[in-house]
Each structure stands twice: as C-alpha cells, then as structure tokens.
View (cartoon, rainbow, N blue to C red):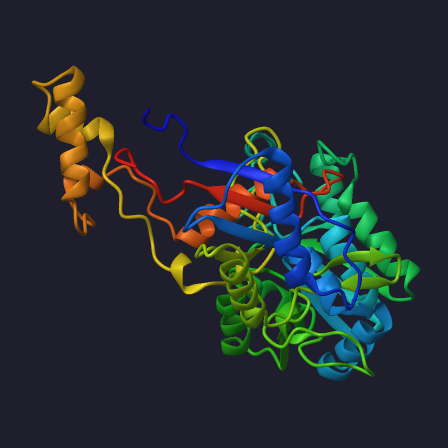
Length: 395
C-alpha cells in the first residue's frame, strides 16, 4: 500500500540538560528510545534538531550582568550611552539592560515605534494616524508619547515597556531618558557613544552611526564577544540570542557547535546505519496575526547544521501542474503524469511550475517547524525529529 502520510514533526522528550552533559549522546539515546516507545523507525534524511537553549546550557555559556556592565563601560566609556532599537522583552532584553545600565551614568533609550524589530507594538498604526504622527520623521519625548498615547500595555504580557525599561535603568543606578524615533542619526543629538540593539539590521545601523559622527559604536554582538573575568561569551554574536537565566545572569547563544552536529550524525549512523541530518535551531520565522509578533529574536534560525541541510527547496507546484500542464487529465492519469514530471524535474528554480513554492533556505523552513513544535514552555521536548521532509508525491 502506498504511503498516506507526508512530513511528520515529533517533539522528543529528554532529561533536563545540565552543564557538562554529553549532549550528543543524550540526543541519540532520546530519539532511539522514543522510536522504540512509539513504534516508528528512522529513515535516511530524517532530520534531528536540537534547540539552541540546551546546547548553550550543556556548554555552560552563562554570564553575570556585572560582566556586561564591565564590557559596556570599557567599550562605550561609562558616561552617557545611547541605547537604541531594543526589542520589548523581559526575557530577551531586560536582563541585558540591567547590565548595560550598570555600566553607564546615563542611558538615553531610543525606542523604535510603532513597534520594535520583531513586531511588539508600543502603539498601533491607527493611533499614529489619529494623532497625526509620522514615524519616519517625528521624534517623540516620553512626555509627548504619554500626552498622545497614554499607557500602552503589551497585549499578552500586560507590561508597559516604556515604564518598565525606564524604572529598570534607574533601579540600576543610571539616569534614564526615553525618546521615540526610527532614524538612528537622532541619537547623535544626545550622545556620540551608542549601543545599537537591533538584531537583523545591526550592520546597517552601525554603518549609519559611524558615517554621521558617532565616536564609539557597538552592537549587542560586540558586547561579551570575548570572556570578561571568566564569563561566558559568544565570539560571533555577543549578547545577541541571549536570554534570562536568573535575575542577574544570562544564558548566551551557543558557541560554535558544527562539531556537535557532525558528531550526532556520526553516532546515528553508527547506531542505526541511517544518514540523519542534524541541526541546532533558534527562533523560527513566523508572525502571530493577533499580537503582530515575528519571532526572530535570535540572530540566526540555524546555529549549525550538517551539509545536507544547505540550500533551498527544489519543488514543483502540484496545483500549477494540475491546472495548466495537465488540465485535461484526471484520476490515475493525472496522478501518473504528475509523478512522472516530478521524477524528471531536475533543477526547477525560475520555472513557472515552481512559482508559489516557498523561496526560503531549508534551515529556515525546518528551524521554524521545529520551533513551533517544541514551543518555549514546559513541553519538555528540546529535540525535534522531522521525518519525510524531503519526500515528494512519488515517495
């Protein structure tokens, strides 16, 4: 009987990961135990993905906010620092802001509006329209923001982030001034020492600041990109991708882990004879239609992956074939014609029959699927097994 199931994504439970654990062996053992428990078998080109969080935990990649403060003070001078374009997150940014504030006498916090980079709204577009505010040109003080928009709480967390971030800065001993603008040049009217906290647009922002007179410019990727007094660090991403561990400690994005994914792949091959693709994944890329939030708070969806996950899908659009090339066929004749076209397809990039297929990297697509499957709460499934992803209608 022909197969009736295509792609399957399973969350795999495993022990709670601690620093120093042999994560590669835990991953292999957990997947094999799940297969035995649930009665499924591994196949070539199955994908095993591990969330970055447990990888960093196994690496012991942690840092205290005092290490952040020391690095910020050394790199940005410790006086008045402009902190621009942070995301609105207690888990992701607030803990970093505590360290940043401890490394300065004054923080000029410049928030993008109407939302942050990942979609958390400070105000709605309708509110801007009603107030006659142009977010591309208008600079608002905190007083003007309150006059126009009052208190705005996040729809899910119910936090007023303007109040929350301002109070947090002051609690850490720094003076706080909050402004709202979307042009990075604006911060240079307040200070020439700037920490830009955007994630995916950081290279452009740093370039603009340097070209317009900034004296010291860092991104979050430049803070804790080396160890400070024995702290954890991430050479490539610094504080990007970090999140809260305790009230005064962060877990950083995992360090280089290509060796780990290759090791896991080899252990699966030794144990099963199957060629399994492996990746370490961060935030996926999808948008919440209610909260307007994109994920993508991590600097990369794929931290590391085996070579078989490089590239983009090479797929034909079945409905295009059915409605165009084989519009005169139906039933078994249509099925056989489409199967034959798939077998003969070769490289279909740029062809009409491939239009409408998802033009994204495989690692971004699979990482997003894994992130949605694992969630971020108490499911206890930091390992994801994806089967059938590379199958098509003929398999």
